[in-house]
Amino acid sequence: MFQNKYIWLIWPLFTVVAVFTSWGFKQTTDNDIAVAHTITVFREGAAGFAAASRELETAIREMDATSPHSLHHVEDALKNCRLQYKRIEWFLDYFFFSAAMVYNRPAKTEIDEPYMEYQPPSGLQQMAVLLYSQDPYTQKKALLEQAEVISSSAADLPALLYQFTPTDKAIMESLRIELIRLYANGITGYDAPELKSGIVETAQSMRSIQSVLTPWLEQHLPIADTVSIYLKQCIQYLELHPDFDTFNRLEFLTSYALPLQENLGNLIRSLHLEQHTRGALNYEAKHLFSRNALNTAVFPDSLEQTDSLLALGQRLFSEKALSGNYTRSCATCHQPDKYFSDGLRNSVAFDGVHHVRRNAPSLYYTGLQYAQFWDGRAGSLRKQIQAVIQNPEEMNGVVTTIVTRLKEQPTYKEAFHRAFPSDSAISIQQVATAITAYVNSLSPMNSALDEYIAGNKNALTPAQIRGFNLFMGKAQCATCHFAPLFNGLTPPLYQFTEFENLGVPNNDNLEQLQPDKKDAGRFEFFPIDFYKGAFKTPTVRNAAMTAPYMHNGAFRDLEKVMAFYNAGGGNGLGLNDPFQTLSATKLNLSDGEIKDIIAFINALSDRPAPTYNY
Image 1 (cartoon, rainbow, N blue to C red):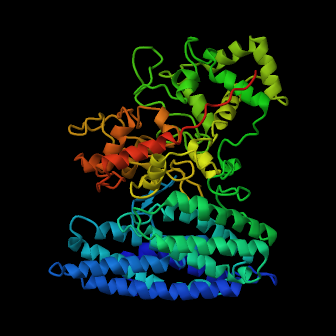
Image 2 (cartoon, rainbow, N blue to C red; image 1 turned 180 degrees about the vertical axis):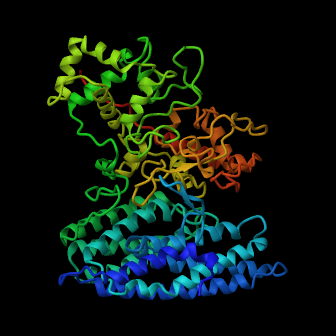
Image 3 (cartoon, one colour; image 1 turned 90 degrees about the horizontal axis):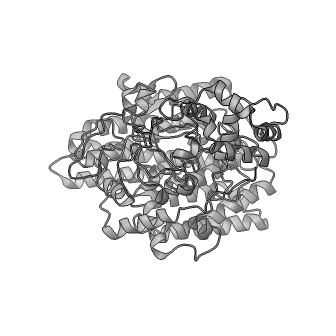
């Protein structure tokens, strides 16, 4: 039996088994041709994972500080256990998510909002962190506890299948989600950056996808044959280039992986197996880097963007009548010619003398988020806009006064009527809605990178290509700034916005850092210790145009930002922040590699935003 101290880790698995056992859950039709085959693939993978987890537990028990070889044995056993888990991850994560979290939960404390509860890090990712700590032998007890939980619960995985049968549609959806996981997380090393095993694991996952698709691929339909070809090419490329640091991710994505995603979508449509049950992915998009890859309708500020509404929103964005003294507008701190930032460390406050405490970030792609402001305290852009307008330090507007001013201008009365034909009575809600529509339009995805992925192989320089591969790999940038928006929207479902504590100081002199003690970040909104110093992860798109950086504008240029990350953030530089979520391990990037990454960030600069006629 499991010891009581482990029960919180495995309870999700017990819960899932109990629920499906008691319901006798079945969902199948006579037309489902791949169900039995899929379950066989899972059973075989689960058996392999259970055996590997037992071997891992044994290796940890044999850890001995006097035998360095024993540590290498544990490392090899952990890599193999992860490799075996990748055979079944797609299945568990889709059909039994709670069970999957027992094995591969992120190696940081997870906050369950709004209940103020949290789960400590556990599973294979946490074991990698413990194994690569400063003195792994002192972590033997913690490693063994994790290994015992994994091996014990892995042995019971077949119980999940009791009276459970997926449908072909569900299987296909699980596979298309798995591809996103591999492209945005697998090849970036998100799961275990310490192990640098992401490429080998991605190949393993691809082989599982290939196996599951066998009943359809064997029918030799033209589109199925195309999928089969791209699958084989993906696997072959991954197997021929297993080294994590030198893997050419851009070539892999553009030549093999993204075409595979496009053609798998075509296969699913041709078989009439479309199903969309979760996440923000748009299955009508060609691939992950398409401009319409995410379904805008799932975000809090989804709006029908009519020309009249966009024109009104753009006009109101620069309207100083929204401020208390006719001197400020949204465009004061978010200037279009500066990529909707203002170039200041902290924006000038309403009184024209003092400064607000946080940097004004670019507004590009902010509509594709689930939380607004650096601390995420606003659940929508409309709420954020109204808050800024009325904030005494920012625009100091009075709602009744603003509405009166707008009503007194005949051109506004006409513009509001065109934008809101069913309700042309001017209100602050309509003001916020119009501005939101305009801000939502600032998601162009027309940078040099986008042009390259679309087929223009001259769009990127060799340095920018090297920088992309570093960003998505060795430098670990993409483990927080996730593709395709390179922000904190977490793949593969893009349902959450991440908050991270980087240990950001109050200055950019890395030899004499000053802690930022004035801003507790999300903790001020959600008073739980793990949110101290945590801020929303912004997009890196257009970052080259929007210095200075970080929530407090502490870093004057990208060179300082990269030096900070390269050193392991605040803790890597000696600040000792107990709640830093960024690994303090140095990245060991060379000066040339840093220059290449900065070159790539420049390749993420979009063409200027469009203008709309009033």
